[in-house]
Length: 177
Image (cartoon, rainbow, N blue to C red):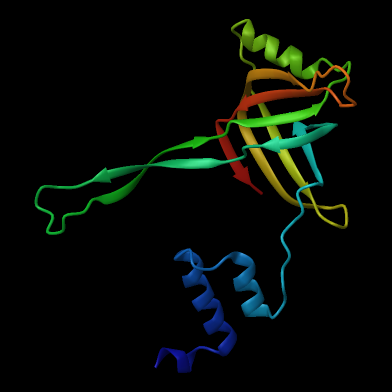
């Protein structure tokens, strides 16, 4: 029997991997089952944004980091079943939204201005997740990024609020490092 040839921890790992693939378990559940240690998820309040390799300070939010793949339904006329085969199609990235307090820094506005003038300048952006010890624990490298929208938020008479600068950025590729 297969289970007699595989050690207990290896069997848990194989079972955990199968459950991951089926979408029944999450990664930290599998790690905990195999190693006996609980793995906490990273907190979302420590991060850096790099634009073309230079750290851009002051961002308070990064919204919309995502990848989706179209699903193509396919069926041939001689299929025995009355269902479709699902095939992955084209993938789409982003867009992302970056937010920070408005200052005299014109970097984002000048980048958007180039798009408005018909010369969309593509840049590479990295979203760097910082762990509890202050070191990098994850990095998302975004390629072919260019701005498609710009907004100013929180203009409010009589309120004690920070004015927020928001830029929407189109993304052509994402890699997790």
